[in-house]
Each structure stands twice: as C-alpha cells, then as structure tokens.
Length: 244
Image (cartoon, rainbow, N blue to C red; front, top):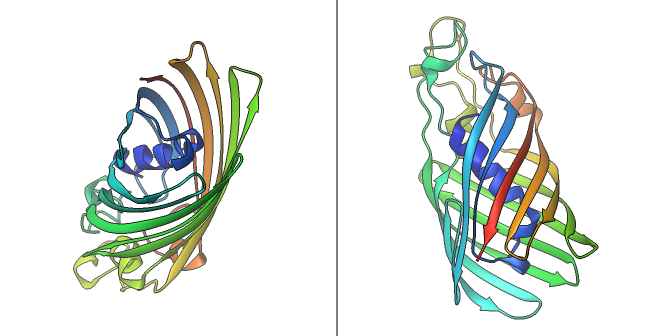
C-alpha cells in the first residue's frame, strides 16, 4: 500500500488513542508492511509521523478532524471529515505487465461514529463516504493496564465497502486495459475483517514508546482482482510519542 494508507492504518489501530483515552499527542515511528497491490516491491518500510489533538469537543486524529456531538462518561457520538480516505496508488509502480492500471487517488469523506465505553472496553460503529464510495465499520477495543507504566491493548473490526468504493480501488476498467490486464473486473460489494494489538511503555507521565501489529483480511472479491497480490495486509510498527 502507499505511505498514507500505512499511516492511517497505524494511527487508527492505536488502541490507546481510542475515544476513551483521546489526548493530545505527537510522535514518530517506523513501520513495515506487505503490499496488497502487485507493486514492484512486495513490502515497504516507512517512517511515519502521528498526531492526536483535542480541544473541548473538537479533535484531530491523524487525517481525521471531527466534533463530539454527544460526549458522556459512557456514550459518544461524533461527526467527522477524513481528508485521506481510500488508497493512493500509482499505476507506474506496479509490476511489469500491470502498469497500464490508472492511478487511484484518496478522497475526502464525511461520516459519523457512535461508541460506548464501559471500564476498559470500547465498542463502536461508524460510516463514511465520499465521491468514490463509502465504507462502514464495527469494532471493539480492550485495554489492560499492567502496572503503572505498561499498557496492553487489543481490538478487532469488521468493514463493509460499497460497490462504488471497491470498483474504483480494486476494479479494472476499460481505461486500465493493456499488458496483462485484458478484461474488465468489477468486485461489487465487499468486506474485510481484522485485528490489532499494541503495547505501550511509559518512561514518564508524558513520554512513552510503543509497538504494534495489525492485520486486515479482504474478502475474495477483492483478492480476485487482477491487480491484488495479497488477501491479507499485515503491518508492524515501533515508535515514540509525547503527551501534553
């Protein structure tokens, strides 16, 4: 995947930045992930910045900016804009024989999220969409404090993609034909499911280091696309962050 997708995936997977624990943080890390598309390089290491900021009922989380319409001890309802939704992919960087595949670009999407928190548990549902299609998601996060300085968090999610979304990002259109792409492909309605696990060690109240691993598995309709190599996207990351 392209760099922006890796960044969004890592930030969204950080269980410690869930709505329950949303605080202002900055950080930097390094990630390693496999490429889902048939890129020339099968895996990629990236350096990624991360930022989470909140002020009253407004927040910025990675590429998402939003407002908490409702915020109680257990329930929250948010409206947001994601400025980098989808995948940013250059066709010229695909393997030989697939370079006729046209570039795919990110989209700006608008959406909402409803979540419920109880103790260390968080459950949520969300939906967002833009001119290139829409997605909806349901997920859970659970955080376990291990002593005063160490936290472990895990979560799982299920996503649905609209036919328009997957047709744009994984479909093969008439304009893409050439080389090994000899016929059009339309995935239709698709889904993915995945999980993540993180560990954070706090050196001080403000400074900490983290490690995480996440995996997302796509439905066969996406995997059957001629430009897709892997059905599962696996990403690992290490980094440091500062809370203020």
